[in-house]
Amino acid sequence: VINRFGYQLIRLDELVNDYNVDVSQLLYQFFSGYGFTEDNCKKCLTAKVGSEFHSETHDLLIDRGNIILRRKNEFKPLELEVNDFGVYQIDSDT
Image (cartoon, rainbow, N blue to C red; front, side, top):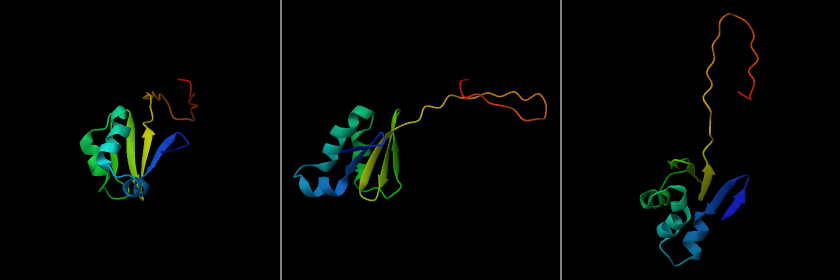
């Protein structure tokens, strides 16, 4: 597991070649704490590049033999009321 820029990166080729274990079970041990199911982890092994799996708080991204775990962005909805034409400043604090 490699930690970079707030992401967790797991190299699938190393897991498959270096461990004599059920890799889907190993992935499940890694990712179950982030809300991913055993089925998600099995599908990661055969998923195409660009595939994504989602839990409530995290995403798993498949990228050229790697699985990337990232925390979902938390967006606050922004409601705007525009009363007239013009240029408006939007403060990021709101």
